[in-house]
Length: 267
Picture 1 (tube, rainbow, N blue to C red):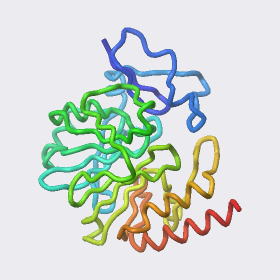
Picture 2: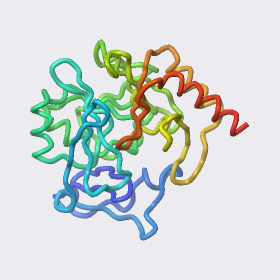
Picture 3: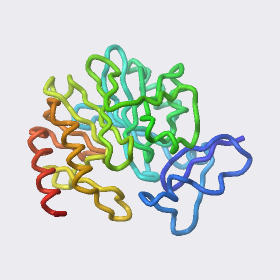
């Protein structure tokens, strides 16, 4: 029986003869149901219509679907020891992409910023001997395909290794997470934010939203909590959720200025 993927958000659902009646992630007010109605693709159909591509994105390898599908994010491979941590995920895993990641040492772990990017985490974990998938427990209700490799971590920080730290910042979701890579950006530190802190189009600031497609801003208290969570960390670079949406240098100062600008704008 096929696995089903939501065409609008890319969430994967368990084997069944028929697709689900609805996608709870899309029915939530932070997302939306396709104007033409809820639609799902079988995993095999998705693989026929799209391929995975990978390329450098400011010193990290990104992997994404081409043509773009659902929300259109790209996963990032964060070097960690002999292998990589996959940051955020995509709705598809192919033999060619898996072989490429194996050539880079394979996956030691997978970590996800929030439920919109869970994608095919189970497939990627299975391809790497059950690599642990770190999802914050506060977002447990949004898992659409339960899997034994999922680790529902608790608290405000979880250390994957000496160089890779997960931060629960909240904001976009209760368990919204960022990843700090201490050795990133040529040892100056990098912060991988997904769209918990969205890199703006001028790539000089970040901004914050509760819902991007429905234009619901995040409140000032939540933004200040995010700022407090990242303030103790050293980082010179921010990686956003899409190709090229990064702040290459001076990112910590840019983050602080962004918080001030955002709070002033919504006051």
